[in-house]
Image (cartoon, rainbow, N blue to C red; front, side):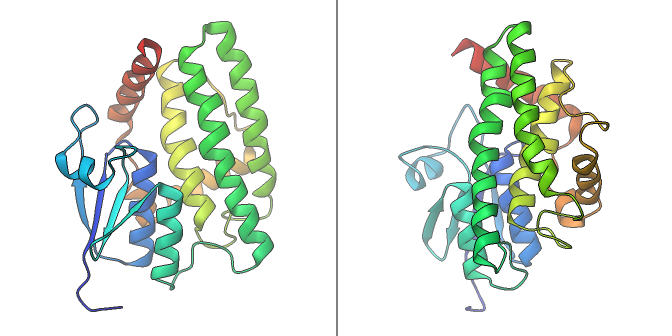
Length: 224
């Protein structure tokens, strides 16, 4: 790669989707400029770079714009090939992609979007649905430090940014326990392992502020 590269990330401090990109860039050792966006007041730059979805994250690399967090993760992995994120084995790679979609599509929907709209009884049903989905991840972690094995990988960044460092804070804000140590020992062990990794720790949003933010996001969903 060229010595001087433009790498710019547009993100929001509380967004798991932009936080995972920061984790990946730090893991790869790629210097980058971070531009903080405001949820309620999107900048002209964001609207120009992502006119279709008008969302973060947006990665700009040497004038090229890359959108959608999982696409950005794969772009980073293919551009800076050291410290690979995705498994080398085709089957393991396909499984990591499938489970990452499970996190971003099904777990977020059941565990936050639908839950924010539900009454107390509905939340209990959705909490159980969420547990069933997370149990799929629990089984994948047996005998591993991380989904990637001994090192943090693609699925660790996707699931880690969303579940322990985002959704669990939303559940805490509404007084709901979804993941217990008793039922999810592998998951709990994995979270502790993640919290020991410096580049992950650097990208975890401050907890109290994040719980307040998740409450605010739940209110936005309910009022929409």
